[in-house]
Image (cartoon, rainbow, N blue to C red; front, side, top):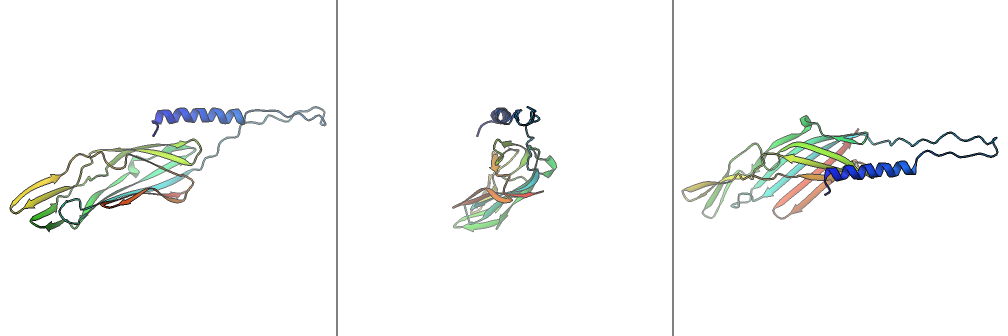
Length: 204
């Protein structure tokens, strides 16, 4: 994905092209005493202003590597687009504590018990975005802070040790969506071992 600076340059070039196409012009009318029509001014771009509700969900199956557990983490935010400007208020970003079901289990001689944390694999602390020229794509970049892998206490017989709780880059780091659609899965991936979904709903 091009950097935000590159998108800014593309947007400026797009604006220049639009102005060149729809710039000022005059039309003469020989049958009206050679009077000229008034200048045709460039039309101001009318943007689709709206608020978008975004939800993030990830499920990881058998995260303990011992039994068939489901680790689930989610978050949400609001994205405002007004006159082509994208904003994500910090207080609209909600990170929910991860959950695991069931939280303990065993297989063979091994047993595992989940050690809860309030962060998980999704911990969004900031977001930025822009409308890509063409007005059918919005690009959002996310800042993830302090995300960690699931933490389990693994035991074999009477010997136990914690595993996991390792630093993670977090998910997701970026995504795109179409601002013209009322409802959409901006990203959806279902595969053996995991499920990932970014859902966007448009309101006015």
